[in-house]
Image 1 (cartoon, rainbow, N blue to C red):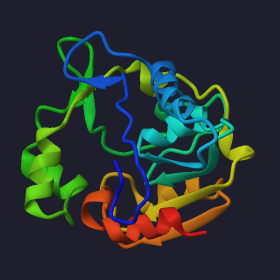
Image 2 (cartoon, rainbow, N blue to C red):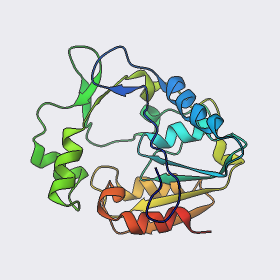
Image 3 (tube, rainbow, N blue to C red):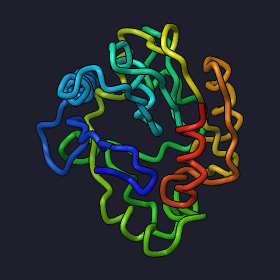
Image 4 (spheres, rainbow, N blue to C red):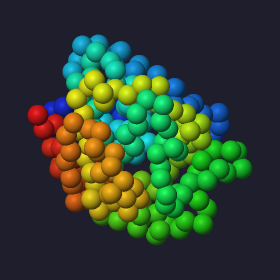
Length: 205
């Protein structure tokens, strides 16, 4: 897809997420990203990872096409670290369901999900996001990143300072590992609430 700014974009479908088992793991997600990169070798590419996606781009980012990693309110692990190990204290938003897959806790109402994850999004965008909620293989959250691309690839962290799901202080701790840091006054999903500002943060030289 070519966005209004004229930059081709691809949203990679992660095999660890879906509606029914079996689902892939972290390694499958990394392979999915690298398959997209391999399909157009030599095209300079910025990898953007949101939330759990930060683990994926950390593991997938050592690729000749990748010129920058951008972390958006996300985990930023070192090699050997997992999302579960980095999550820190705080409410657990997901729990295993009857199939053993991670899903939003059944006691969370739609209003609570909006409050924590989508408070600054237009109602229609928030409703569409909730409609697209999927389940995830818990292995993807417990498996460690096999490598840390941010150690060799230029990196930028976008702190979402009004995020009620991933505490901003936690984000700033992750951001210390990135080469550059940008702060946006927004919630957990800036690509829905502040797309223009997020695009500027991603594309800034």
